[in-house]
Length: 228
Image (cartoon, rainbow, N blue to C red):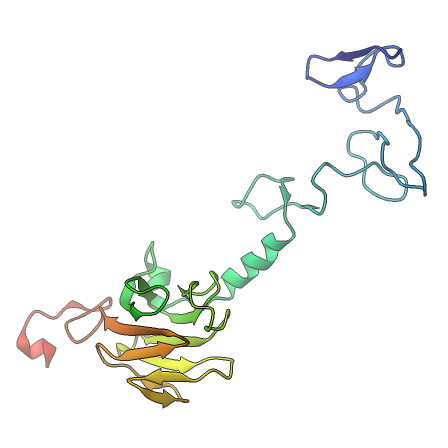
């Protein structure tokens, strides 16, 4: 019967075969417990640092994960990460970022959408100083997850024009009709306070924070002359 012991580092090994822990001593004295039917590598033990291949050991439990050196600052080097990590990171890097967002520690709020009718009635959605994507997916800037009649990605887009302090609503890459104040819209259209936007089965009211009274570049308008 094999005599298994645990070394000071917690590694389990057969003391009848190896006098010292093979892992702590550089992976020497590798034991091959035999191949699984069909030439599989299941059940093999390999030296520390060995790669995966035709004669390599079984990857760590949990499989379907990618061992990669992540960029500095994101995680520890050598940490096991899911393959989708780099895809989601790329999507984040490709998002349009406004001028104000680059100069501030947080993305500034420029307005809101408030759901007055639909699956998420009563909920508000923050608008940022950039091009805000609208859809059902959680990846969208305005994510209306409860309305299944809204396209998952890019149902519409609400853009904030930093230079002129204006807002525009645009249809995105789909064939869904968007209604603005009960009228179908097919081209980018400038929004006014309390405009009603209809997407799928949801109605949203547009409420600007940046307007003639305030913007992130100039601050508050202090006098009636400045407002004019």
